[in-house]
Image (cartoon, rainbow, N blue to C red; front, side, top):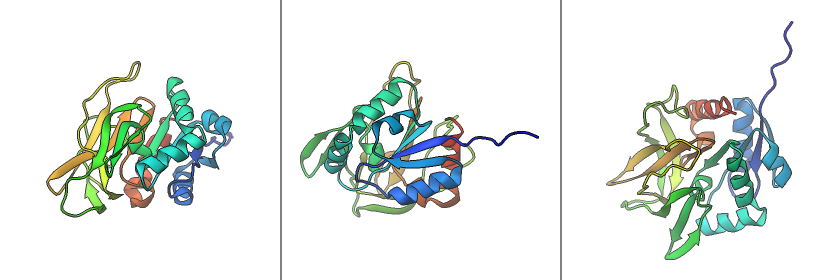
Length: 215
């Protein structure tokens, strides 16, 4: 008889932001053993790290730095250890956020500026489609599905740059009104979504399973 197949370990970073319990439950249902933690050692040693986030960019960065989350993310990526950012947890991976004229430095893992969406109605809230690049591992089997968004800011322009030794980023875009923004990106061990997989039903659950498969 074969032994029990081990489940990957995932740390959900607790820095005072995000739908933490719903994220924990969703990742557990997708097939991982999950720990909600702000402990640097636990966050760095887990097979995967999820960085959720809601609210203002500046407040999220303040909370992230309070638990040395920026260092945790950078150290994991330097070791090619997977990280998944969700919503503002995706936005803070970029170089800068601008809200109400206030500029805040992000983690700088990707180039790009998080700025206000140019649409007649914000926040962009509800279900929307995504335009997935070829050979996406994140969206395998769910390329034509819809996902759940709640946000007023996003990355509207992104000059693709390769971060050695990672491949060129695979970027997914979404259109809203007459605007468009980055709705997901996968770049070696760093994946992120602007939408909420934990609120996106079966499609979101499959995306989380796709991520666990690369741990």
